[in-house]
Image (cartoon, rainbow, N blue to C red; front, side, top):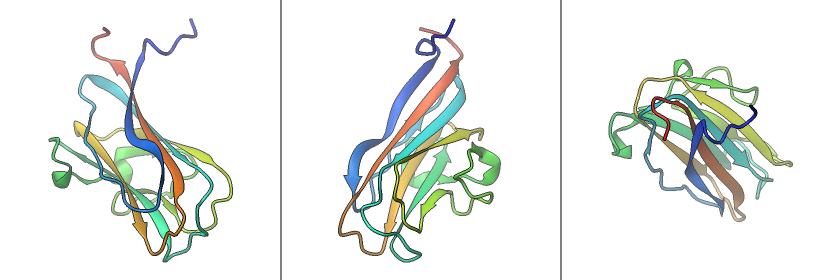
Length: 146
């Protein structure tokens, strides 16, 4: 059988939008699932990114829905494809610091032990034109299927 929809439950982490400033992170519940994946879709950069004018995507986790109490993930908490730096610092799972001329999708697997995840698109510098961004959490391997 090739069906996957009966085996996964998606959640929007960051609604599709063209952003030029930080989003307001929300806590996404992972309870009841043994497999957690994050899809981070980024469109063509609205500006030419640099070390000053950049976007850093920061993934945090915690035991409550209070995002302010979440702490940054570490390299031990995630599995990621080739777009992620080998070392995770301050929860930064992706940083746009150079021209981003083509749309990309990054896959990140969460293997940490916290119940809630939250994602911040942290904008630094000047962003006169926004960048299209979307993030989805894919929960799989449910303890109980509905």
